[in-house]
Image (cartoon, rainbow, N blue to C red):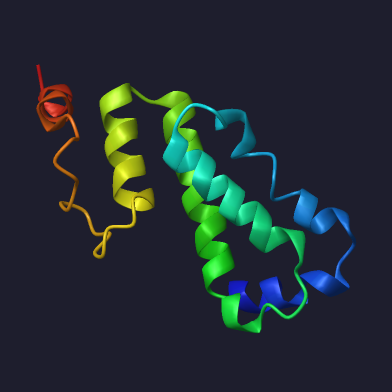
Length: 115
């Protein structure tokens, strides 16, 4: 259903696409990976005509950029970095448990321990 909504955007009022933009933008400049994801999303949203082949990709981009922006703006550095790395660094398998080596896993594990 979401994909069909994406395909219907050109028939909606012009501010429909604008409503998707505000959430990720306050996090711009904090993380280069997120900046790249937001820029890529802006390219997709700039021309919503003939998006049939991208109908699944665009909602995923919106969700991923928004999730990463919320993490970067409101989380401790190590978990935010791990989440952004997992979702935006282009790993072939973006499942949980598959993080790049540079993530501060010790800090994440220490935070998750019960006191």
